[in-house]
Image (tube, rainbow, N blue to C red):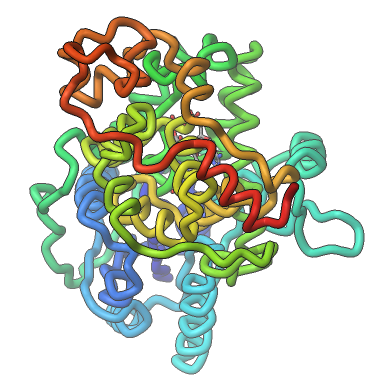
Length: 451
Ligand code: FAD
């Protein structure tokens, strides 16, 4: 018997239920990845993510070759390509991981129908990309949790599926394959990390051996950069979230618990999106906002020239690394939506364009959380960038790292956060704030009808 294992956002050999189950039931398997132009057309294929993807595919191919197989790569409409490969290999089953977006759900449905009419079967595996499958825990009478704390309670009390290792051998039949994309594909951010399961596993090994113990205390320290940076590997499924949770729990300690809690946030957003796919683009909870749209202030925000160095540093980190610290994401998103009162969709699109971990569930729902149209139980909270700067970058080191024109200015310590206050002769060449914070706050409160 032959089975196809269709890879999507699960680019690994360790702890991979579709691969494991195909190998248990078939004599030969075809590990397949299809580069579908529809994904590009839907705006998901940004240069940074394509570059990471090329690394991840090359690494997956190498891991399969070590096991006597290889990755079959095709380009074209996914459903047609899977049907063609299944026919060519004589496969009766196709295994794949469940997705959560509307795009993934529709694609899965089409694939199921077409395979069935060709006399073949689609087997969709849950909890490959998340720890618990969306819908595995629900409040009574509802299809998903809308508040994180009760979700986390139930999530923590529910045992995930058993975590598996990597197969020793992956026997692959002779099936035509296109050449893998070159890892040299153009990227937009010079500081992008290398993609792939090997790089992800190495980073996780170092994280457990070092960083994680300090995570609880240091995860908000912008200059300390003390988070795991595992998000791109999780986004592409180079790492299994279930395996990370199991190993972090075994490691123990407060830092590992705090890290596991963040992985629960990831599951939380996935279960919201799976139940409400429209939340990728529509307000999850409308607040009657009449957001502002494009304009020079939005451009200044994108370019990291708002005049608020902490916001600008975060936006420049995004451009340079294709990644941004979580605290930076929070304050930059709050600045756009609350201080400038600009539509969260504009900000989310810019993040998706650059983030190597750019993810429909995590990005759109975190944006909604910050904008107060999502699951935040305090939808009108506004993060004051100066207070955030004092708290999370007290010495100004994060700003100096990412905003070189302020690194050389004579503004020691936390004074770098307010260049406009520098004495006349010491004023750096830096834009004035695009808006006064009080004015922004008043506009927001007025728009939301708050007194
Ligand atoms: P760590 O702090 O080490 O956390 C470990 C893992 O937990 C992360 O890799 C991630 O998978 C998960 N995680 C942590 N925080 C969150 C969170 N708030 N929501 C969901 N999962 C979380 N994360 C993405 O993976 N993709 C995105 O597109 C994305 N967009 C965001 C947009 C905004 C406006 C905000 C506020 C947050 C966004 N996040 C996104 C969540 C979070 O900022 C990143 O997951 C985190 O910064 C990644 O860094 P890390 O791997 O070092 O995280």
